[in-house]
Length: 502
Image (cartoon, rainbow, N blue to C red; front, side, top):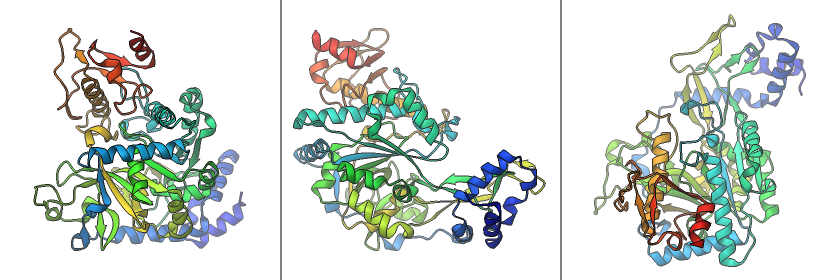
């Protein structure tokens, strides 16, 4: 830990002496904690951070319309339109890679559930499924199942290590939650939690914001902080030691995420890709999602604010949107590519500006909750490494099957606990129907086939299938074909064994 004099000199040298203005009012314990926080800060880089934030905030968003083009057809695969035998071959290749312990998954879990109205990590959230499972539990059980499927196919005993990037806000509660739940049956040694860096919020004139008299206003450095965190926490060394050659990276809030998806991994490996992105077709031209495309021949994600409406509305000969590849924060990276990013490109990542309402203490020491944005938070995005790829691919999946994010509290029309819950239950109803089961509603009436059911509809029945029973609908026909099942239904391992015995 640095001494007070060292910290004071550094702050004065960077024009941030105001940070210590309340030092005389702090208790000994508060002084110790504050000095520790300041010592962990990159004080030498603080000036660059503050000046860079002000500069970035002053730059208007650039328009990229004349430079954009779609990802070329030869670099795109699709779970929806590619030939069935191709999809099956990719799935087999992915399972082979998993069986050889070459695949890891990495969860981006630095965010709290503040927008959901809770102060704990999003992964601990229960969306109200009949089973009461949290996002973390669902994801852990999918890892269990994909290991089992690979082992069964290739007579292996494989492990898919789970790397979880947390932040200062989410590390301790996540560790505690996993421990209390016995790591959901996974080996603790195969779950590696690590922390991303935090950056101070800055005023519009470049001054670090004090959240309290002895506390800086800090925020995680965005999910693109992953690449620095991999270095800080020696995660790449851990992957190398385990023999992990490729990584599936995803965001915590997607209830439908296919952990270590063998089809996606197999497609990327078959193409010799070092970097890949899952995409979904945009629902409508102005949908506020980034688009995976090329800019001046280089693959990247273009934000919806970076192109004009007329570009977003362009359509091809079949009426499909030209720029329809919506980014869903679901990526493939080889370990060698991540090593290259860490060693060569980490400092070249684009900085994104977010204007935020940051609570602060004023010069009199009063706590203030601003009603309009008063600060700049700088963050990096995980997809900003795409331009460094030597062989980038995109893989289109069906939104109703693979993407339903949880971002807003109930009451919102999209991305809420209700829409996430309905998306999962609707998917499981489709699986049961596809397995030739008849589901009964609560009055005992047969429900109509649910092939057309989408995530936007209310599910026809409370039908939940445990990931420990089926990863993505496979293996259900032998359990359910010809059966009539009352709902609500939770098809867990116990019920599955009972049905097998009948």
